[in-house]
Image (cartoon, rainbow, N blue to C red; front, top):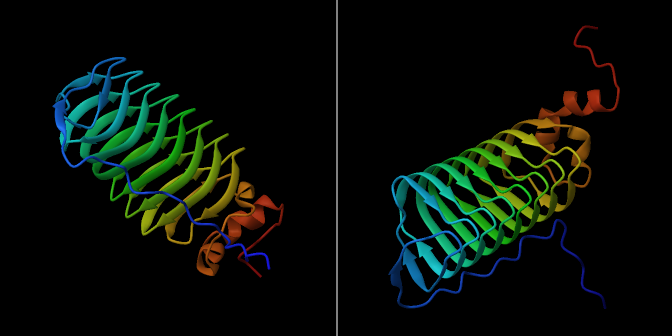
Length: 220
């Protein structure tokens, strides 16, 4: 007998494969680090096109962390306070970002397979044109979640708030927003197939009606 499919299917994210012992390291442009505990410069770090595997990034307060085009595998970023994290065109696999605050997290055109955002405050998260598979967002506060043209599979948002969520022209499957408080959606028509609660559907009922061309009036 065929197994009944769970809908929406939850993210499938293994725990990061980390060693018992780490060596201290810093990041450089196009550098490569493995099994390291990474210390960031308090100013600007240029680690574009770097490779990191089985690493932990220590808690830090920085201006800019540039990991454009980087490849991260089994990495934990712990309590990072940053004005900017630039990760355009990056490839992240089994990455945990835990705690801290980020002004702008730019994942435009990135590919993320197994991403956990846990207790992070992000003013602006840009992932336009990105491919996001198996993403779990828990206990986060996000100002703008920008996903135009993104491909999103198995995304779950729980105990989190999002001021604005831009889903124009995205491709979405198994997206579970039942644990999210989203104040507004850009192009609410693109929520077809997304899982919401009845209360969420009621909250956005007028926007949904307007997207269908209904003339809804409060006067009788």
